[in-house]
Amino acid sequence: MAEMVKDPVCGMEIDAATAAGSSEYEGVTYYFCAEACKTAFDAEPSKYVGAAAMPESTKAMPAAPKAAKRWWEFWK
Image (tube, rainbow, N blue to C red; front, top):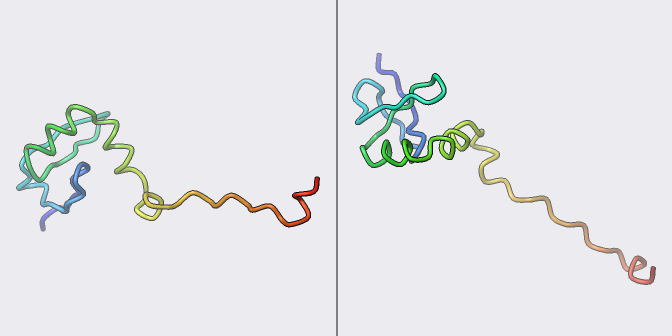
């Protein structure tokens, strides 16, 4: 059975056995779909590990809107 992993740079799902490359960072092995992704990761691994570690649901969460003043607060 193939071990499917996510490339931390581009997010592509790949088979770890046939990955174009791999790098180890802080004791964890990361696999890449292409040499360009490996090169980008090796240059700034913390940039990609932080993004990879965040759940998908929080990556694109917008900031909470600022509360608008109510009409009576303008006269304070």
